[in-house]
Structure formats: structure tokens, C-alpha cells
Image 1: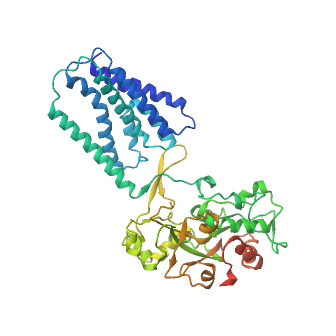
Image 2: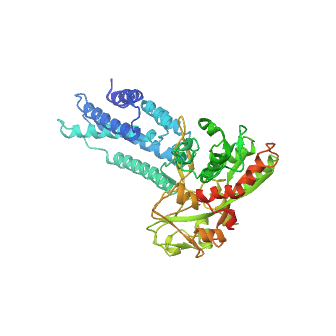
Image 3: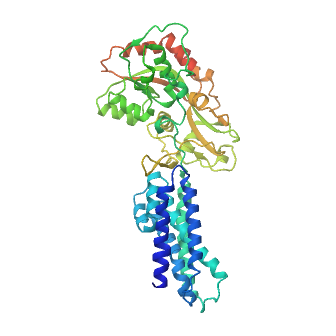
Length: 483
């Protein structure tokens, strides 16, 4: 077997395929990215050292080193090309071609796709091929006799230029993407829908922390329970309503009637008649249009008041913003904190997914001003693949985020957050109740006008009555009678 064929077919083909294939059986619950990368580095280094121990190496220096260097160059050049055409998004289906062009590493590519760790498409072959080159060169330093002849400087410069260019192009695409796309954060709870553990507010939890009435409820439903769903921040409210008003309900099956699928999906379920009452902020323009197109007339019943708040890290010296400054930040006209009295740092302005309750209110604040594209993240999806989604808030020192006050102070409390005054008004209970705070919003219970169930209307009336408002207040919202 010729030298080149032995290097490419055996050392850079059969061996890495065998090592990759073994990973299909040994990988279990391990942290795949570092484990597979380290395994490829170790096996590549050993293979390179072993390959350089052969007594049948070409005497000419160029003939000896070119086949060993080529696999690393091949991997880097292909990576740069695919980074350009995919925009650095490893969830792009084009990366399947990249994997197929690295046949020895197809088993690892399969694992990476199944687990949603797309960067392994590139890291696995690079780790092996680069380590193979390093192992070969390390052995060469102690090998005798040394290869003869001189390296073709023109070829060396050309090859070096191509490698540097490939690394530069791929790295630039990665850097550019990092400005708007963050590492995966993901949601841990509620089947991936919730960023917060909702178990403390679940009526099937015998130790839940929901408020309870001190006297029997003046309105109750037995047997024919209404199906409730809504926004994450509203879950404790409608759970408390159900706990008070639903009598003799099997707690193990309560999730069928007191469900949570987040703002976007819960609203769609309402329009599809899968849900009787949806709880959350006012619908977005798109959601209202959706209702109109489906011929659904919404009944929007206010059940409490809430504040839409903006917050920063405690270490951020900025304590307040004007409405015009918020518009400037989220339109991209203001990009540095020093423009609003802060440090000389870029503003990392987080948003929420379109049609979520808080994003809808941000759009309302923006008026006719355009919104900058939201920060995103790459998230592993289900049985493989990677998707892009709007990045959840991270409390970086230069970050700006927004939410509903109750969610940020109660359900998802973070002592490192600082709530900003807007136009000089703090988002406290008195200012929210009086309407002085500029971003005061209603919490709604939304139903369909043509819902035939007789208990819907009296249930909504009870929510606005003394007992319902007592629960609203004890959960942490502002009750309606304080308007």
C-alpha cells in the first residue's frame, strides 16, 4: 500500500471511523462535547505517533509531510465554507453534507445530530486530524534519519495562507453570530415551556403555596370543570381560582383542567376551543387578527392590575430611563449605556418571543418605531436537531430586560436585579394602583363569546368579586378595587 493511501485510508479513514463507531456504544449520559473531543484528541495523537514510527516513510520532506497535513487543512477549509453558507448556524440542514464529506466521523455526526450538539460536526474531525498531525510531528523530532530535501517555500506559503484564511473566515462568522446569538440556555420546566418551576403553584401539589380562602367559596364548579390555561406569570392566579372553586376534583387529573402551555400556545388553544378561559396580558395585534380570521369574538375580563417593568443588573449604575430612551434602545438608536448615564458598555437588550404577553406590551410602547432583531440562541430540539429561538434573559452587567413585576419579584425572584424607574416613577404598589407608573397593565381572563358552558360567565364575575380579588391580591398582583 502506498504511503499516501496508507495515511488517508487507514490512519485518517478506517481508524477514526472505528473510534467514532465505538462512541455509539459507550456514550450514555456523559457530557458529550468534552468527552468526544478529548477522545478524538487522544486517539488522533496516538495514531499520528504510530504512523510516524513506520520504517517506510518517504525520504523527501514534502512527500512525507503533505499527506499528514492535508486532512487538517481539508477540515478547516470545508468548515469555513459551510460557516459562510449557513451563517454559522449548526442547525442548518446543509451541515449534513459536511458530515458526509467527513465519512470517518459519520457516527459522531449522528450522535451530534441526535443530541443537538452541532458543533461536534466540526470539532470531532478537527480534533482527530490536528492531533494526528501533532503526534506525527512529535515523533518526527526524535526520528532518525531526518527527511531529505527542502520544503517548497512557495507551496508552504500558499498552504499557510489558505489555512489562515479558512480559520479567519470561520472565526469571523462565529464572532459575528455571537453578537446576536447566545449559547443555549433553554427552559427546564413545564415540558420546555416554562423558565420557572411551577410545582409550588400546582393544585395537585399537597404542599403548594397558593393562597386559600378562609371561608367557603361563594361560587363553585363540580364535575364539569372549565379548562384553564395561560401565561407563565398568570399560572398562580388561575391555579388559586381553581383550587378555591373546583370541588371534589381528582388532584391527580387536575392537569387536564388547570393546564399550562405558555402565552402563545394557550391563546391558540382558546381559539381552537380546547380551552375555556385564557389568562394573561392583552393579545397582540397578530393574535387579535388570528381571532378575527377564525371568526372568534373575545370577551376580555380584567381581573387584576400589573406593572410592566424593565430591569438591569444591580451593578449597573443606571437607575431610571425615559420612555424615549427605551424606544431608542429597542430601536437600535441607543447602543451604549453611556448614552443614558451609565458605563461605557454595549447594551445587551433582551426581548421575548413574538406574541408573548410581555413582547406585546413592548411593541405597544415602541409605537411606530421599529424593533431591532432579538438576541437568539441555538437550542437542542427533541430527538435531534437544533433550532433558533429568542434568547431568555441573562443577568449580565450590561443587560437590559423586561417582564411583569409579579413574575420578576415573586415567581422568578432574583436579588441581583434592579428595577428601573420610568420617567422618574418607581414600579411600586402605590404607583401601580394609582396608575402613576406609565406601564401599568391589566391581567385578563379571556373567553370566547359563544362558549356554550353556563359556568363561564359566573366564574368570571366571581373572579372580579371580593373572593376572587382577595386571591389575586394574595398571589401578588394588584386587585381591581384599588384602581
